[in-house]
Length: 264
Image 1: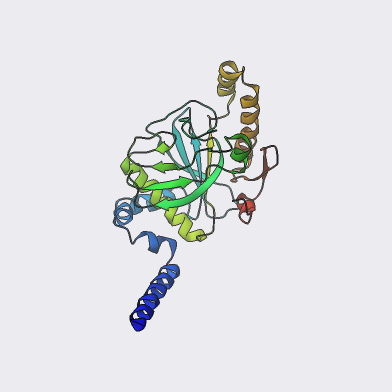
Image 2: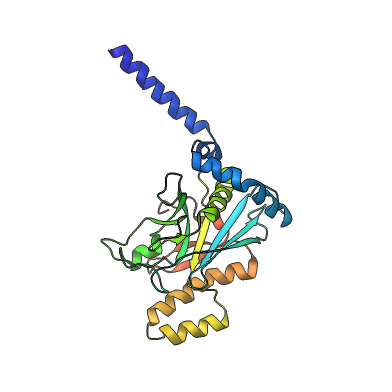
């Protein structure tokens, strides 16, 4: 009996060690849905990156989502210190809630703020999904202290409340692009996704101030988010940040400035 237990334990340890030795992509390719996504999309991904003048395999990527426009933008570069190029714009196929950040469980809101991809889920009920690291340090200052909500994903299925849903064909591409970048950077790298209420142009600002001018704290929050938007607009480098005790984003360079922050 003891020998059997020892052998079983040794097998578990060896299996875990083997898994740890695998790259991010290799681990993901243990799952059928990911293998299908790779087969369906990798040739197309290689071509669109090559056509953008970059390496065929995504290295550093940056996702930007815009709620009012229902768009998810993919930007990329071969060096995190060089300008990012826009690779593609995807349509978010359904939305819920209103403009403004998520502040509690069940409020139907899609978060707004500066985030990163926290987890990959190849077993999703919505084909494939990537978890957005909500709530972040800023959200925890402003959101409901007992239940700010969680489980915010980019996923397939085109049906959701509070997430960023895509069609199944689009999530295959989005997921595999992100896996390839994560694989290149390593498992500890944090691939950024920033979610904005809209593009902060003059026309949209006029709409925000007209429609939500009676909510000065919301306007103040958006003005803070615009600092990250403007940083990228002017430099084409993905912004890093730290959050002060008032919940304000302070924009810094480089993108992974906060990678060793214990709060992340």
